[in-house]
Image (cartoon, rainbow, N blue to C red):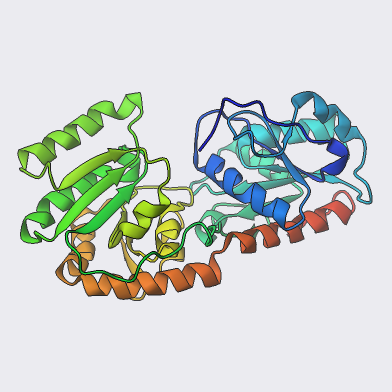
Length: 358
């Protein structure tokens, strides 16, 4: 994913109805959401642009100075929509609307699965509409809201060749190498299971940031001490992860906590069975016993027993993977997320001030 380098092309504010601020340079789940969603929204006719750093130059960008133009109403609409996903973006929107009196409506998407601090609650209460990315995250909101789950590009993430008995079978885990993602739970599970399943090998993609390099080094030492360095491999960051998903027989998402978590959806859309924790929205994505298995977050023993049946019988993973691809295409397409948001944008742009939209 290109996050810097080329200078982004600016767009004309007169052609923009929806502004998606992105006020963070580091790659995050929010970044991934915006990068995937905005082009889809544009294809479906939403006149949206991003503002802020840390996004590919291929996205339609507004410059910070162009925000002064928000005093002018968009053509044919009562308001523009400021679609925030972080506290700092909510705060900026409140200033633009309530201090500078710009004709905008504020939408906040919340993925957090924790009780919000007082300042965050205060800002959320001042939004014109609120979206939760899962029923669980919605349970932590104290305001009226809609649930719109993230979607996946099912044209980009799609099944590969028919199931093959070629060995070794591959089991994978993807994400930042850190305790939150449960990388250690996956490694310990593989150390326990692989000696009895010689037809399998494990792969871990993603990088360790400086603060977690000692954590990653410890995991590699555990693997070396178990004599499994050739069968549990760290691949680092992969430029194009889509073929990797398609090559797996089983994908594991062992996170201890998540906001939403797109990786199981990416794997399912690729025709790969999944075993996940119940962090984030995982248990709203997986259909247990049909597309995969869900285990309690942070429970290494439960994770091990959830994975074992697939290693014993890879044909189970094949059946679940096929069902997962059908489920992703039926319920979690990116277009469905874009269309649901477009309906909220439309109501926000035409409804009088002081009326909350859901």
